[in-house]
Length: 426
Ligand SMILES: Nc1nc2c(ncn2[C@@H]2O[C@H](COP(=O)(O)OP(=O)(O)O)[C@@H](O)[C@H]2O)c(=O)[nH]1
Ligand SMILES: [Mg+2]
Image 1 (cartoon, rainbow, N blue to C red):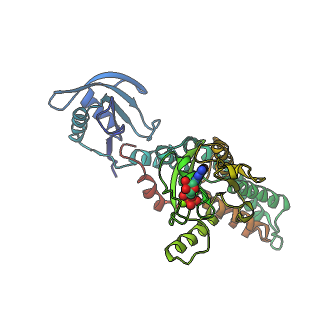
Image 2 (image 1 turned 90 degrees about the vertical axis):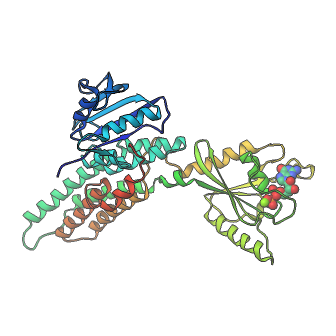
Image 3 (image 1 turned 30 degrees about the vertical axis):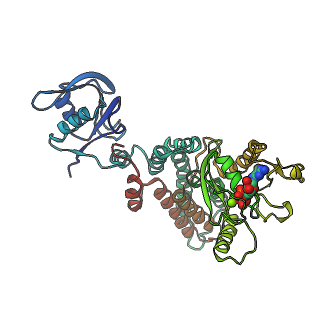
């Protein structure tokens, strides 16, 4: 089967200062010759005049050359860095389209080739997708740690240990007497130690809260000042503020970044008993939101606060003379003059941070965690297996789970979804 050579504009939408057009595949160098006349030495750049097949000048461009398999896709690559005007980019793309064996790449196809040629594993490809989508500093750092092989290296190490354990189990099968196929205790101990390592990784904060945002819910009785507090924090008139109790019937979410942590600040309907049907729906929804809150800011009486593991008792409207003394254990704030807001945000950010992976740490996504959990379960089953043949089988199941994790096996279904997340030219 012959492999297409693919090309695409890899930089942003024109017009821009520079337009980067990448060509990858068996005919990439040939395409480079056709447009640029000669190519620079491998892994270097040179200025060339680009011409179409009729010899008309298209642009002066910097041309880069990489030879497979030591390239980002594992294939021969030529990259044109031309002027980023719309007509220039269109003309170079049109000249490439005329060449035999070349076609426009699909979104994510360069990265997919890198994966299929073993240049990156599936976890690194996931990291790249996250990196492109990253909007906050914490997202960027977590994505980079993954894209740079932080998880791949760890899985390699686990796989090595697992292979060693499998070899010991297989040897025990080979040398076992007919009636003595017991499992030696050091093997069991080493399997348990590996399972503990996996469990430790599973306990760490996951990447999803970094993407979806950590939910900080503001709750309290009607007229406590919840909507005003959200407005003061968001610095804009988002929630409707009135002095008629019960105005905020549905919840309002304000996404914001607190110390680089993505937050969904959620306003709620006041919690009170009510017979008014629409308001009651809001109140019920509030109870659900309070339960689902990662961090809860409670603006009511401190003693009325719902049970919550990460609760901040807030004393709102502290600028009013009759509310000048804040009860013990509360943070006094005024949405009117901004007093106490800094401290409140700091406190909320500190609580939110427990959901966020440590700086530069690799955080597992749901898919990765599921495969690590599979491997961990298989290893845990070893403890209760008396037959070494069964032990060897559990170890094999764990190896398969790691192969799925890195994309070495059984992942066809996730590939389309993953590479579909990339933009054209990546
Ligand atoms: N003086 C003062 N009034 C406030 C403050 N925050 C809210 N209010 C007033 O309290 C009333 C209820 O506020 P609102 O934010 O709608 O309360 P919610 O029902 O809990 O959302 C409004 O009249 C606000 O103007 C504050 O920090 N200081
Ligand atoms: Mg309100």
